[in-house]
Image 1 (cartoon, helix red, strand yellow):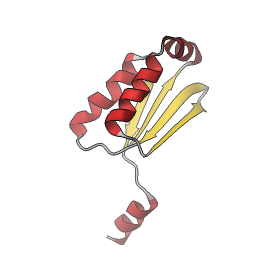
Image 2 (cartoon, helix red, strand yellow; image 1 turned 30 degrees about the vertical axis):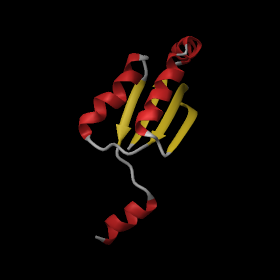
Image 3 (cartoon, one colour; image 1 turned 120 degrees about the vertical axis):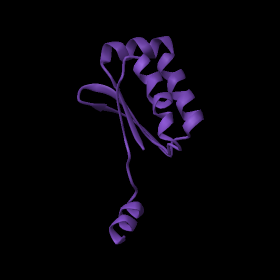
Image 4 (cartoon, rainbow, N blue to C red; image 1 turned 180 degrees about the vertical axis):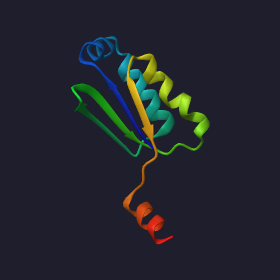
Amino acid sequence: MILQAKVDAATGTEILKSGRLQKTIQAFSETFKPEATYFLLSERMRSSLFVFDLPSLAQMAEVTEPFFQLGCEVTIAPCMTLQDLQAGLAA
């Protein structure tokens, strides 16, 4: 899966200064152990991207809710590696 959490600059500054953003990212990383994490500017918003395995769709609320509680816009979607795509196309 790929998770994108975006937050506007003002809210982002507030949650950074309070330490809430760092705690949320740390908790997510400890629980879901993303294979890749990126921080970037997207659509004029502070953004985080996480690539990780989601064992069960029932965990979607567990993944997204902490970011929603920070005021983030959240997108979550399945994604594949090149090898996954090649295997799928071969089938």
